[in-house]
Image (cartoon, rainbow, N blue to C red; front, top):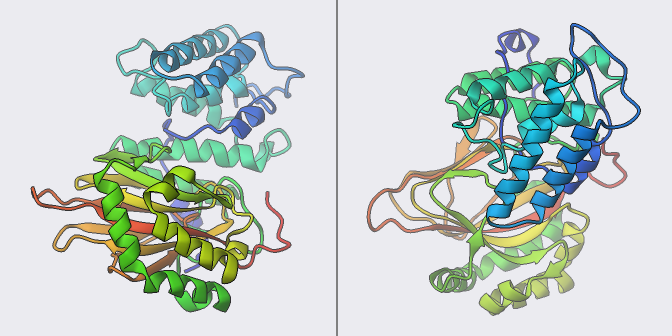
Length: 387
Protein backbone atom coordinates (compact mmCIF):
# COMPACT_ATOMS: atom_id res chain seq x y z
CA UNK A 1 0.00 0.00 0.00
CA UNK A 2 1.42 3.37 -0.98
CA UNK A 3 -0.69 6.48 -0.70
CA UNK A 4 0.01 10.18 -0.92
CA UNK A 5 -1.06 12.27 2.01
CA UNK A 6 -4.33 14.18 1.62
CA UNK A 7 -4.06 17.93 2.01
CA UNK A 8 -7.78 18.11 2.75
CA UNK A 9 -7.42 15.65 5.58
CA UNK A 10 -4.39 17.49 6.82
CA UNK A 11 -6.45 20.64 7.19
CA UNK A 12 -8.31 18.93 10.00
CA UNK A 13 -5.11 18.63 12.02
CA UNK A 14 -5.41 19.90 15.57
CA UNK A 15 -2.96 21.67 17.90
CA UNK A 16 -0.01 19.60 18.94
CA UNK A 17 0.97 18.45 22.40
CA UNK A 18 4.22 17.08 23.76
CA UNK A 19 5.08 13.41 23.89
CA UNK A 20 7.39 10.53 24.73
CA UNK A 21 10.26 9.78 22.38
CA UNK A 22 13.61 8.07 22.85
CA UNK A 23 16.56 10.51 22.75
CA UNK A 24 19.66 8.84 21.35
CA UNK A 25 23.21 10.03 21.74
CA UNK A 26 23.09 11.12 18.10
CA UNK A 27 20.12 13.34 18.84
CA UNK A 28 22.02 15.03 21.65
CA UNK A 29 24.55 16.10 19.06
CA UNK A 30 21.74 17.18 16.74
CA UNK A 31 20.08 19.21 19.46
CA UNK A 32 23.25 21.10 20.15
CA UNK A 33 23.12 22.65 16.68
CA UNK A 34 20.15 24.38 15.01
CA UNK A 35 17.84 26.65 16.91
CA UNK A 36 14.93 28.91 16.11
CA UNK A 37 12.77 31.73 17.40
CA UNK A 38 9.14 32.57 18.11
CA UNK A 39 6.93 32.91 15.04
CA UNK A 40 5.90 36.42 15.98
CA UNK A 41 9.51 37.58 16.20
CA UNK A 42 11.79 35.45 13.97
CA UNK A 43 15.51 35.55 14.68
CA UNK A 44 18.54 34.04 13.07
CA UNK A 45 20.33 31.05 14.56
CA UNK A 46 22.74 32.04 17.30
CA UNK A 47 26.42 31.21 17.05
CA UNK A 48 26.58 29.07 20.18
CA UNK A 49 24.29 27.42 22.71
CA UNK A 50 23.25 29.53 25.68
CA UNK A 51 24.73 28.67 29.09
CA UNK A 52 21.39 27.22 30.20
CA UNK A 53 21.04 25.05 27.11
CA UNK A 54 24.59 23.74 27.48
CA UNK A 55 24.06 22.89 31.15
CA UNK A 56 20.71 21.26 30.37
CA UNK A 57 22.32 19.12 27.67
CA UNK A 58 25.12 18.03 29.98
CA UNK A 59 22.69 16.98 32.72
CA UNK A 60 20.55 15.06 30.23
CA UNK A 61 23.62 13.32 28.81
CA UNK A 62 24.72 12.21 32.28
CA UNK A 63 21.21 10.89 32.94
CA UNK A 64 21.56 8.46 30.04
CA UNK A 65 24.38 6.59 31.77
CA UNK A 66 23.02 6.94 35.31
CA UNK A 67 20.78 4.54 37.22
CA UNK A 68 18.27 4.54 40.04
CA UNK A 69 17.47 7.82 41.78
CA UNK A 70 20.36 9.54 39.99
CA UNK A 71 18.37 9.51 36.73
CA UNK A 72 15.54 11.47 38.29
CA UNK A 73 17.94 13.91 39.98
CA UNK A 74 19.85 14.62 36.78
CA UNK A 75 16.67 15.06 34.75
CA UNK A 76 15.26 17.42 37.34
CA UNK A 77 18.52 19.33 37.11
CA UNK A 78 18.24 19.42 33.32
CA UNK A 79 14.65 20.63 33.48
CA UNK A 80 15.57 23.42 35.90
CA UNK A 81 18.05 24.74 33.33
CA UNK A 82 15.41 24.37 30.62
CA UNK A 83 12.83 26.36 32.56
CA UNK A 84 15.34 29.02 33.63
CA UNK A 85 16.64 29.47 30.10
CA UNK A 86 13.19 29.80 28.56
CA UNK A 87 12.01 32.26 31.21
CA UNK A 88 15.03 34.56 30.94
CA UNK A 89 14.92 35.30 27.22
CA UNK A 90 12.47 36.39 24.55
CA UNK A 91 14.23 34.00 22.20
CA UNK A 92 13.08 30.36 22.19
CA UNK A 93 16.21 28.24 22.28
CA UNK A 94 15.81 25.20 20.02
CA UNK A 95 17.96 23.09 22.35
CA UNK A 96 15.87 23.91 25.42
CA UNK A 97 12.53 23.34 23.73
CA UNK A 98 13.61 19.94 22.45
CA UNK A 99 14.96 18.93 25.84
CA UNK A 100 11.70 20.05 27.43
CA UNK A 101 9.63 17.58 25.42
CA UNK A 102 12.31 14.87 25.20
CA UNK A 103 12.65 14.62 28.98
CA UNK A 104 9.14 13.21 29.03
CA UNK A 105 10.58 9.89 27.95
CA UNK A 106 12.88 9.69 30.93
CA UNK A 107 10.12 10.60 33.37
CA UNK A 108 11.75 13.98 33.80
CA UNK A 109 8.26 15.46 34.07
CA UNK A 110 5.87 14.76 36.92
CA UNK A 111 2.28 16.00 36.57
CA UNK A 112 2.33 17.29 40.14
CA UNK A 113 5.44 19.42 39.56
CA UNK A 114 4.97 23.15 38.94
CA UNK A 115 5.19 24.10 35.24
CA UNK A 116 5.34 20.44 34.19
CA UNK A 117 1.70 19.39 33.79
CA UNK A 118 -0.26 18.63 30.62
CA UNK A 119 -0.87 22.31 29.90
CA UNK A 120 2.82 23.13 30.19
CA UNK A 121 3.74 20.30 27.84
CA UNK A 122 1.34 21.61 25.22
CA UNK A 123 2.69 25.14 25.63
CA UNK A 124 6.28 24.02 25.12
CA UNK A 125 5.32 22.14 22.00
CA UNK A 126 3.35 25.09 20.64
CA UNK A 127 6.36 27.36 21.20
CA UNK A 128 8.67 24.90 19.46
CA UNK A 129 6.24 24.56 16.57
CA UNK A 130 7.11 28.02 15.29
CA UNK A 131 10.64 26.79 14.60
CA UNK A 132 9.46 23.98 12.35
CA UNK A 133 7.66 25.70 9.52
CA UNK A 134 8.31 24.87 5.84
CA UNK A 135 9.28 28.49 5.19
CA UNK A 136 12.11 28.15 7.70
CA UNK A 137 13.81 25.10 6.20
CA UNK A 138 16.95 27.18 5.82
CA UNK A 139 17.22 27.35 9.61
CA UNK A 140 15.83 23.94 10.49
CA UNK A 141 16.79 20.66 8.85
CA UNK A 142 14.30 18.09 7.62
CA UNK A 143 15.49 15.69 10.31
CA UNK A 144 14.83 18.37 12.95
CA UNK A 145 11.30 18.70 11.64
CA UNK A 146 10.76 14.94 11.73
CA UNK A 147 12.01 14.80 15.28
CA UNK A 148 9.67 17.57 16.34
CA UNK A 149 6.57 16.15 14.68
CA UNK A 150 7.26 12.67 16.06
CA UNK A 151 7.45 14.10 19.56
CA UNK A 152 4.48 16.41 19.33
CA UNK A 153 2.05 14.20 17.44
CA UNK A 154 2.17 11.24 19.79
CA UNK A 155 1.13 12.95 22.99
CA UNK A 156 -2.35 13.64 21.64
CA UNK A 157 -2.91 9.88 21.50
CA UNK A 158 -1.39 9.43 24.95
CA UNK A 159 -3.99 11.86 26.20
CA UNK A 160 -6.76 9.85 24.56
CA UNK A 161 -7.18 11.52 21.19
CA UNK A 162 -6.06 9.23 18.38
CA UNK A 163 -7.77 11.43 15.78
CA UNK A 164 -5.66 14.43 16.80
CA UNK A 165 -2.50 12.37 16.47
CA UNK A 166 -3.50 11.23 12.98
CA UNK A 167 -4.29 14.81 11.98
CA UNK A 168 -0.92 15.94 13.28
CA UNK A 169 0.95 13.48 11.09
CA UNK A 170 -1.18 14.50 8.12
CA UNK A 171 -0.12 18.08 8.75
CA UNK A 172 3.48 16.93 8.72
CA UNK A 173 2.86 15.33 5.34
CA UNK A 174 1.46 18.58 4.01
CA UNK A 175 4.65 20.30 5.19
CA UNK A 176 6.72 17.80 3.19
CA UNK A 177 8.23 16.13 6.24
CA UNK A 178 7.23 12.62 5.08
CA UNK A 179 6.02 11.34 1.73
CA UNK A 180 3.80 8.38 2.58
CA UNK A 181 0.85 8.08 4.89
CA UNK A 182 1.57 5.94 7.97
CA UNK A 183 5.36 5.95 7.38
CA UNK A 184 7.15 8.29 9.83
CA UNK A 185 10.82 7.27 10.32
CA UNK A 186 13.39 9.75 11.57
CA UNK A 187 15.90 8.77 8.86
CA UNK A 188 14.63 8.19 5.33
CA UNK A 189 16.47 6.36 2.54
CA UNK A 190 15.21 7.59 -0.83
CA UNK A 191 13.88 5.27 -3.50
CA UNK A 192 12.98 2.26 -1.37
CA UNK A 193 9.80 0.27 -1.92
CA UNK A 194 7.30 1.57 0.62
CA UNK A 195 4.69 -1.03 1.59
CA UNK A 196 3.51 -1.87 5.12
CA UNK A 197 3.06 -5.60 4.59
CA UNK A 198 5.33 -7.79 2.47
CA UNK A 199 4.68 -11.20 1.00
CA UNK A 200 7.34 -13.84 1.46
CA UNK A 201 7.84 -13.92 -2.31
CA UNK A 202 8.90 -10.25 -2.27
CA UNK A 203 12.05 -11.22 -0.36
CA UNK A 204 15.21 -12.28 -2.15
CA UNK A 205 15.02 -16.03 -3.04
CA UNK A 206 18.21 -16.84 -1.12
CA UNK A 207 16.92 -14.95 1.93
CA UNK A 208 13.60 -16.76 1.84
CA UNK A 209 15.36 -20.11 1.56
CA UNK A 210 17.35 -19.35 4.73
CA UNK A 211 14.20 -18.30 6.55
CA UNK A 212 12.54 -21.55 5.49
CA UNK A 213 15.40 -23.45 7.15
CA UNK A 214 14.58 -21.71 10.44
CA UNK A 215 10.87 -22.16 9.90
CA UNK A 216 11.34 -25.90 9.49
CA UNK A 217 12.83 -25.98 13.00
CA UNK A 218 10.27 -23.70 14.64
CA UNK A 219 9.26 -26.30 17.26
CA UNK A 220 12.87 -26.62 18.44
CA UNK A 221 13.10 -22.84 18.70
CA UNK A 222 9.75 -22.75 20.50
CA UNK A 223 10.84 -25.37 23.04
CA UNK A 224 13.99 -23.44 23.92
CA UNK A 225 12.13 -20.14 24.06
CA UNK A 226 9.52 -21.53 26.46
CA UNK A 227 12.23 -23.05 28.65
CA UNK A 228 14.19 -19.78 28.71
CA UNK A 229 11.03 -17.86 29.54
CA UNK A 230 10.43 -19.99 32.60
CA UNK A 231 13.90 -19.41 34.09
CA UNK A 232 14.03 -15.61 33.79
CA UNK A 233 16.39 -15.29 30.81
CA UNK A 234 14.38 -12.48 29.22
CA UNK A 235 14.86 -8.77 29.92
CA UNK A 236 12.44 -5.87 29.62
CA UNK A 237 12.27 -4.39 26.12
CA UNK A 238 14.40 -1.23 26.44
CA UNK A 239 12.57 1.32 24.30
CA UNK A 240 9.65 1.94 26.72
CA UNK A 241 7.04 1.42 24.01
CA UNK A 242 4.56 -0.69 25.97
CA UNK A 243 1.98 1.14 28.04
CA UNK A 244 0.35 -1.73 29.92
CA UNK A 245 1.48 -5.22 30.87
CA UNK A 246 4.98 -6.54 30.14
CA UNK A 247 7.05 -6.81 26.96
CA UNK A 248 10.33 -8.71 27.20
CA UNK A 249 12.98 -9.91 24.80
CA UNK A 250 15.87 -12.34 24.59
CA UNK A 251 18.50 -11.11 22.12
CA UNK A 252 20.36 -13.82 20.23
CA UNK A 253 22.26 -11.60 17.83
CA UNK A 254 22.69 -7.83 17.51
CA UNK A 255 24.29 -6.11 14.52
CA UNK A 256 26.10 -9.24 13.43
CA UNK A 257 27.40 -10.28 16.86
CA UNK A 258 26.04 -13.26 18.76
CA UNK A 259 24.82 -12.64 22.29
CA UNK A 260 26.69 -14.74 24.82
CA UNK A 261 23.81 -14.66 27.32
CA UNK A 262 21.16 -15.29 24.70
CA UNK A 263 22.97 -18.21 23.14
CA UNK A 264 23.64 -19.73 26.58
CA UNK A 265 19.87 -19.73 27.11
CA UNK A 266 19.02 -21.03 23.60
CA UNK A 267 22.06 -22.99 22.33
CA UNK A 268 20.23 -25.11 19.74
CA UNK A 269 18.59 -22.07 18.24
CA UNK A 270 21.92 -20.25 18.03
CA UNK A 271 23.43 -23.28 16.31
CA UNK A 272 20.62 -23.12 13.75
CA UNK A 273 21.24 -19.41 13.35
CA UNK A 274 24.94 -19.96 12.79
CA UNK A 275 24.11 -22.37 10.00
CA UNK A 276 21.67 -20.11 8.15
CA UNK A 277 23.74 -17.00 8.76
CA UNK A 278 27.02 -18.40 7.49
CA UNK A 279 26.22 -21.28 5.17
CA UNK A 280 22.93 -20.07 3.73
CA UNK A 281 23.74 -16.38 3.44
CA UNK A 282 21.31 -14.82 5.88
CA UNK A 283 24.13 -12.77 7.43
CA UNK A 284 24.52 -10.96 4.11
CA UNK A 285 20.80 -10.19 4.02
CA UNK A 286 21.00 -8.70 7.55
CA UNK A 287 24.22 -6.72 7.11
CA UNK A 288 24.15 -2.98 7.67
CA UNK A 289 20.81 -2.74 9.44
CA UNK A 290 20.88 -0.17 12.23
CA UNK A 291 20.29 -2.12 15.45
CA UNK A 292 19.39 -5.15 13.35
CA UNK A 293 18.73 -8.15 15.56
CA UNK A 294 17.59 -11.70 15.93
CA UNK A 295 15.63 -12.04 19.15
CA UNK A 296 12.69 -13.70 20.83
CA UNK A 297 9.92 -11.29 21.76
CA UNK A 298 7.59 -12.17 24.64
CA UNK A 299 4.27 -10.39 25.10
CA UNK A 300 2.50 -11.11 28.38
CA UNK A 301 -1.30 -11.09 28.79
CA UNK A 302 -2.70 -7.60 29.29
CA UNK A 303 0.06 -5.88 27.28
CA UNK A 304 -0.40 -3.10 24.72
CA UNK A 305 2.44 -1.64 22.67
CA UNK A 306 1.69 1.90 21.55
CA UNK A 307 1.61 2.95 17.88
CA UNK A 308 5.13 3.76 16.73
CA UNK A 309 7.54 3.62 13.79
CA UNK A 310 11.10 2.39 13.52
CA UNK A 311 13.64 5.21 13.48
CA UNK A 312 14.89 4.30 9.98
CA UNK A 313 13.39 2.69 6.86
CA UNK A 314 16.44 0.50 6.27
CA UNK A 315 14.94 -2.87 7.19
CA UNK A 316 12.15 -5.38 6.72
CA UNK A 317 11.12 -7.22 9.88
CA UNK A 318 10.22 -10.91 9.96
CA UNK A 319 8.19 -12.62 12.71
CA UNK A 320 8.28 -16.40 13.08
CA UNK A 321 5.39 -17.23 15.41
CA UNK A 322 6.40 -19.66 18.18
CA UNK A 323 3.55 -19.58 20.70
CA UNK A 324 0.17 -17.89 20.15
CA UNK A 325 -2.53 -18.61 22.76
CA UNK A 326 -5.91 -19.63 21.34
CA UNK A 327 -8.97 -17.54 22.02
CA UNK A 328 -7.20 -14.39 23.25
CA UNK A 329 -7.39 -10.97 21.62
CA UNK A 330 -3.87 -10.88 20.15
CA UNK A 331 -2.84 -8.98 17.06
CA UNK A 332 -0.63 -6.54 15.20
CA UNK A 333 -1.68 -3.55 13.12
CA UNK A 334 0.67 -2.17 10.47
CA UNK A 335 -0.68 0.99 8.77
CA UNK A 336 -4.42 0.37 8.47
CA UNK A 337 -4.39 -3.44 8.30
CA UNK A 338 -4.54 -5.80 11.29
CA UNK A 339 -3.31 -9.39 11.23
CA UNK A 340 -2.64 -12.20 13.67
CA UNK A 341 0.04 -14.88 14.04
CA UNK A 342 -0.11 -18.58 13.24
CA UNK A 343 2.36 -20.83 15.01
CA UNK A 344 5.16 -21.89 12.70
CA UNK A 345 4.29 -19.25 10.09
CA UNK A 346 6.02 -16.04 9.00
CA UNK A 347 4.79 -12.45 9.01
CA UNK A 348 6.84 -9.90 7.05
CA UNK A 349 6.37 -6.14 7.37
CA UNK A 350 8.13 -2.79 7.18
CA UNK A 351 8.24 -1.43 10.73
CA UNK A 352 9.04 2.11 9.57
CA UNK A 353 5.28 2.22 8.99
CA UNK A 354 3.17 2.92 12.04
CA UNK A 355 2.38 -0.29 13.91
CA UNK A 356 1.03 -1.40 17.26
CA UNK A 357 0.77 -4.78 19.00
CA UNK A 358 -1.50 -6.12 21.75
CA UNK A 359 -2.22 -9.19 23.85
CA UNK A 360 -5.43 -8.50 25.72
CA UNK A 361 -5.79 -11.95 27.25
CA UNK A 362 -7.16 -11.64 30.78
CA UNK A 363 -8.00 -15.21 31.73
CA UNK A 364 -5.97 -16.74 34.55
CA UNK A 365 -4.62 -19.43 32.25
CA UNK A 366 -3.72 -17.12 29.37
CA UNK A 367 -0.17 -17.70 28.10
CA UNK A 368 2.52 -15.42 26.66
CA UNK A 369 2.83 -14.73 22.95
CA UNK A 370 6.31 -15.62 21.67
CA UNK A 371 7.77 -14.77 18.25
CA UNK A 372 11.27 -14.94 16.80
CA UNK A 373 12.16 -11.57 15.23
CA UNK A 374 14.65 -11.32 12.37
CA UNK A 375 15.64 -7.95 10.90
CA UNK A 376 16.61 -7.96 7.21
CA UNK A 377 18.20 -5.16 5.23
CA UNK A 378 15.66 -3.59 2.89
CA UNK A 379 16.21 -5.30 -0.50
CA UNK A 380 16.29 -1.94 -2.31
CA UNK A 381 18.76 -0.31 0.06
CA UNK A 382 21.94 -0.64 -1.99
CA UNK A 383 23.25 2.69 -3.30
CA UNK A 384 20.37 4.66 -1.80
CA UNK A 385 20.91 7.89 0.06
CA UNK A 386 19.57 8.59 3.58
CA UNK A 387 18.41 12.00 4.73
